[in-house]
Image (cartoon, rainbow, N blue to C red; front, side):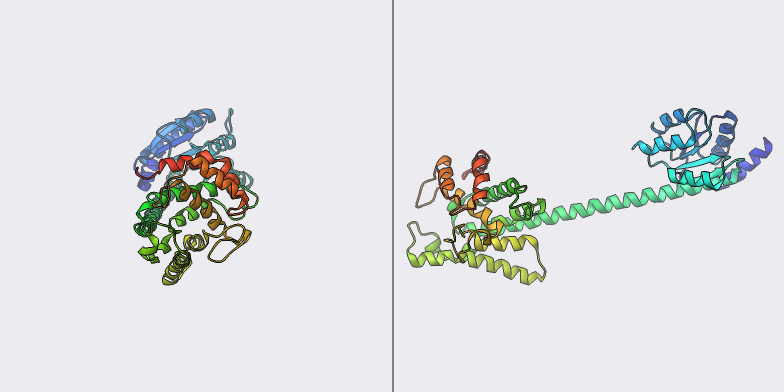
Length: 379
């Protein structure tokens, strides 16, 4: 025993920088537990002994969890391989490193152990300085792994925070531009909130539709909703005498009014040129601004596009914009009841609007009406 104490004291010189790390030692022979435990306690570790594989599994899942497990292979109830497999199957214990402590030192058993997920081997009869050195090295490796994982989590959290912050800034900037355009026309109220919500809902409802599945995914829904508030940004360039005229526009005035689609898309295109790189939502915003007054039958403006030639984003915006115009009060008209607006949209299926876009609107009309009520003017 004196010889053992001398070896243990010498092994203590390897004391691990992870102070008092808890170690689980597993062996069905009590004397082996005593010897290994004495070595590790002298090295400064907390030792938790287990006399069977089942006891080891229970202890490994409890607090305080071991930082490392030293596991015998040849045990009567569950052998070391079975215990290791159970540890790896349990999410609570699967990341705990395991060292086999065994008399089975042939290459075949070592290969088998590494296939099961063991991190190292200590062969019997054990040498105290070797035991402590290998424990020391594995704990250092675990400490480094944990540190890198923590740093990665911190980095990912910071990246997510900055992305969220950038998206908020982007959304606020878009809203500011859209509100700037609508200050020219004070009667539009919450129009941008409502139309944005209508467009988001339409896109979501069409996501699994065969005609739209190749275009509409989660990213597209996010981008098209982000771009929707810019659909009338070109109205900034329309003279007040026309934009704010309380009565019906004459033919010349109407031609000028229609140019808001071109003015808006060109302003967005200029923004793209200024930043010198493509931005997905700006590409959709250009489509929405230029073509949200196109009609499925080709009778719209500014380009008279027909059917599928009209970009999907503009088709969604067309229906959203018309529905909101119908149910909103203007200087030249009263707000229309929701059901009357629904009837008009239905009548324009396949003429003004893409038939399938009309169908999902009509089938889910209550949801669109709820959005209109939630964001009604004056709230």
